[in-house]
Length: 164
Image (cartoon, rainbow, N blue to C red; front, side, top):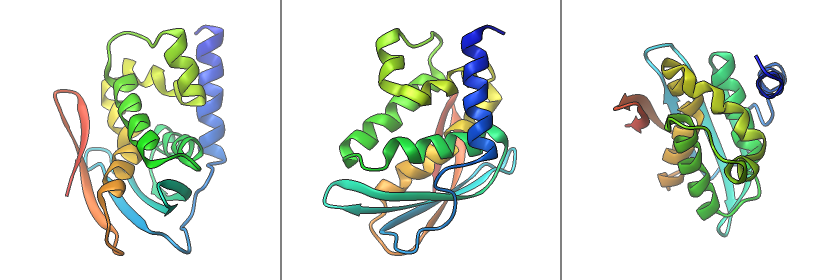
């Protein structure tokens, strides 16, 4: 394992041991839940917004270290961002986790701490774990009602997606 892999592993372990924004928002505007029936990971994402910006976000649930760390990193990355940027970040994470080559330095710089998840792509069965929170967030952005939708994560041709 090289120094960069060690650093990334340290970031993921820290977010698993001490997840950020873990819990339930008291006042959410959008909510979606994801479940991976293959491994049992289950995540609910709640989001509050003002105008076109995410003002608060939280997640709750249970899952493996990669699932929880990814959801924790996700909440830190999207809080305060415009919804359009959040959608772009979801797409960037899907690309990071499913592309065959490593991101270049510019892409890695744009992703910041999220780049710690790039090693997951070497373990295809774990991509679903890393994408579960992101897929729930993607579904959350489509949700305009006050109730929390439940979705199941599936994979098709190696890409994680979420279905109601």
